[in-house]
Image (tube, rainbow, N blue to C red; front, side):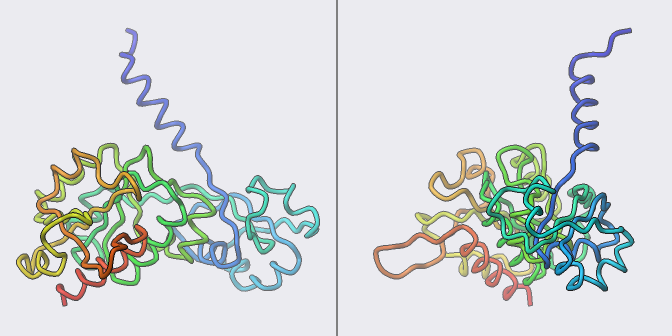
Length: 262
């Protein structure tokens, strides 16, 4: 009996995901990945200088490095030219954090998550992962499509947080938001034109798990995402220029939400 087309497509997607690999680069990102027992490590390429600087991490990581001449490094590994690799690159499988419910309903950290609506810049997402780790959030959540995947640039900006901070890519962001609401989360959508301030919304909902929803710079939150939020909130700004970079807005919102959960 012939399998339905949707079953075949799902199996293909599963196989593709299983075969996917990521090249991490830079001393900090490679060191933290080597130290992470949950990371499946495939290939380690280092210059002699990087190998010396990562000596303990390489020994603990259990993967024999390939030592290459510094002048040939850019052609030895498939990373973008101009990347600040510091002579260190590691091929890995993406991390599997578990389901939304496993991570967000009772996982480690505060009952606090960040949801990103089509934030595609890996540097912004990396910075947000770093802030999420600092303020003890349980997860950063983004749609599987039209968002920044795990990349070397994201990992380098995250400065090690990618190895420790759950980054969940979901099939449908609005459905994930509804699932979080069923877990008790209140969903606060950040919008510069909202009437309610973030601090006021947090004060009125003290004791509740919080989901902070941020959109891409420029387009902001999509209509369905806005409609799925419980309330739209703004970060008060002074002067005529009232727009923050999305990673800066996330850091401020995380600080405020964590303070209300103390």
